[in-house]
Length: 88
Image (cartoon, rainbow, N blue to C red; front, side):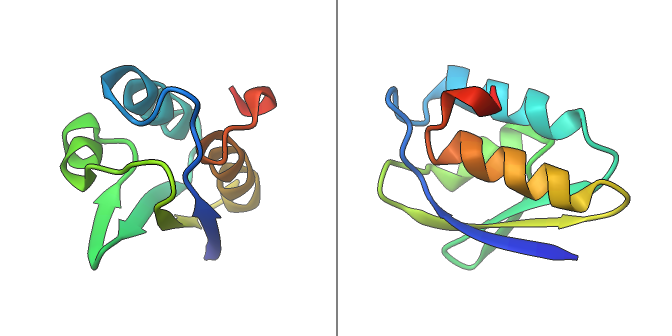
């Protein structure tokens, strides 16, 4: 299991489109991918689950991955949430 703490910093915030892109990215990995925020533990491959988090820029979240490609998944998703264009 890999855990990575990141600060959300997306230029357009986390409305529907960036969340859909995050879910699409998470779904490319074999590993399970969860985002933990405010005592919630949500599957990052679920668009409805991700919408319930109501994340905004400046929030600190925990990216939790487990599986064959967990390190790559944690790194890429962390980069995306931190606003790194290369992660997309």
